[in-house]
Amino acid sequence: MLSDTHQHVLQLDLLGTPQAWISVEQAAVHHAAGTVVWVDGDGPLRTLRGGWNAVTGRQSALEVFPIIAVGGHSRINLFDVVPAVTRRKLFQRDRHTCAYCSQRFADRDLQCEHIVPASRGGPWSWMNLVAACGACNGRKAARTPAEAGMPLVYLPYVPSRFEDFLLAGRSIRADVHDWLSVRLPKGSRLN
Figure 1: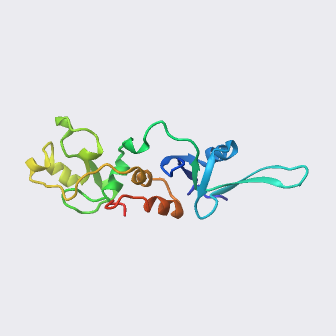
Figure 2: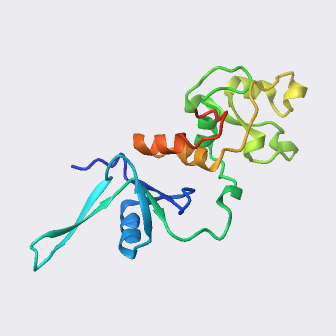
């Protein structure tokens, strides 16, 4: 039985910029359309089998690798796209560490904390959110860190495109994880 653990393909553009996580079937469509320019990974993610050739007696097979680059280019600069903020990605970006007491916590014990409180117009954005434990979040309340006398132990930042694909929370094959990791910016918390 095939495991569902690693069933997503990292789709890149021709230059190696991550575009999307796609299904094996979507990757097969790119192969069939002839838009796959190059592939990468330590071996195929899956081999899809088709019909039998009447002349050769061979069954057709298509190997789908975990990383595919497709031809063409995006109409927008993908590096200008700010990744969506989610609770899970925020906690991973901040390494499950409270921004005030610097202790590590499980997801269930962390909260998304607005540096500038939402009640004062603070946005839900990478630069205004940090992970915080319930005790620190409650102590800070609807004040800024300066007003509460609770300085941040680390600064928020907007993850790069490569970081965002690692933060997306998918179960990633080791070879795909390594491929993305070597492209992380220097100083990334994910290193």
